[in-house]
Image 1 (cartoon, rainbow over the protein chains, first blue to last red):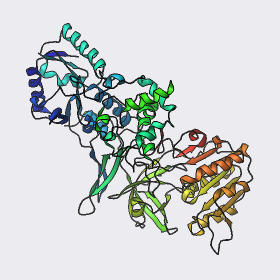
Image 2: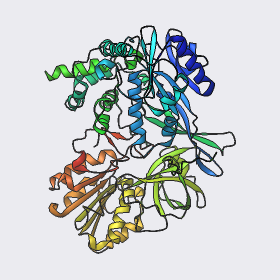
Image 3: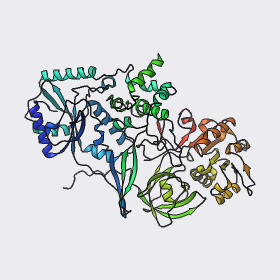
Image 4: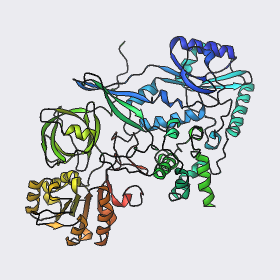
Length: 341
Length: 282
């Protein structure tokens, strides 16, 4: 696998070359925030970003996507996806994508997600600036040893660019003649990783992530759920920005002829009041505290029971997004751990 | 360019297959009876207690239990209460129309496993009878495989009773005990009055050789299980079918979670001992 060293100008030339051939969704500035959006020029890229407002999952599981089309001939599958590059994904977000890969591939494989995933080339980018609430360092996702197709790391004034898959290798074809990163560059990259493991800890989790399932197992009736949920608006912002939230709703839309239409999948969230509502009016998670607790159990226990991974990657977006400041997972887990002492 | 990839294209788990409405007739003020056949002619291949997702294009999809026994070939039946968008649209269906079907999904009553050789106690509240009817008829169609059969059925009022003709058949079948109750009787009602739990003490059962199948509204389970416990039935001999918002049916969408379980995959039929400590279950 190639491992190159690129000066900023060379990196931009490489990206501009990619843009000639493929659609690229890259990290860009919008005001003082950052978002993933279609890239027109390499110099729009902001690999020094701290965190994107929403997670790049949107390019694999869009907020709204057509699953089926229906009309007089009945239903037909819609699998629309073209090759694209997702450029500048932070390691914690890549960790979340790897979890989504498991969810959509296991059991009954979901072709809508898997096709889009198959078409994606993901360029992971090591963090240069820690966001205000990131705690990926506590979750083991500040640095990713594997995953994604290319890893870009800023070392000094240049970048180390490493391919991590055949697809990544193909993306790096145009920089085949670029200088190979030397031992010193790799040493510096290692130093970046060490630094990031320590730096991406704006909140300090006092327990090891692998202890969370057992901690939650004992905390079902803890007063914290009720206390925090009292201030919850059930707005679902924490679900919306979460890179590991993938729950969805499905709805039909009909065209004006009242015959043709589409069945769409849209993002949903377990914090929304109607999430567990059934026809007839019974709501199986009617109370805010039940929904609030469910979200933490889902992230820290239920999904772990299934996949042996904590479904929180420490991006800290929920902490930032929550209007009433009740969504800090570190605060919750530390509080639960306190009671255990 | 012809792709060199000869692998079979993956199946779309969200794509319904067409089914013809063979029959659609009202049963009560709220419930309608349906009989369907898959347009392909394929048997649905369900087991008692399983459900399908029924699609009405432009309205949506809803999880509906199969009410007929798999021993009945060539078609399958449902009873649908008009409570939501899809069920509402289904009530406007008539024979000759088409719907979309996905499934069958979920676990089933263990008619082919733990229930074999045992006395069976069916306890159904209201439209809880609908999925259980599949198991009752399966058991009666394989009569020699099971011991004594007891069917308890409760509804709010006599007007809510379902499958009244079939009930008469069950009641008169050999080696079947059938008991009914209503929460509120009317002038014509001569039978039991009271909630369904009042029937349980009237049943003579041997807990050592009985399996109970329970299905009804969410509120019913707690009380029925308490009564069954009183007569000595163990939790691993009780099977319950739980209702949840099973939006996708394939373990993806997250709506039907019962704590860490998916009602659509791990259920809807659960052995009670498996969920007794699952706090959101009952």
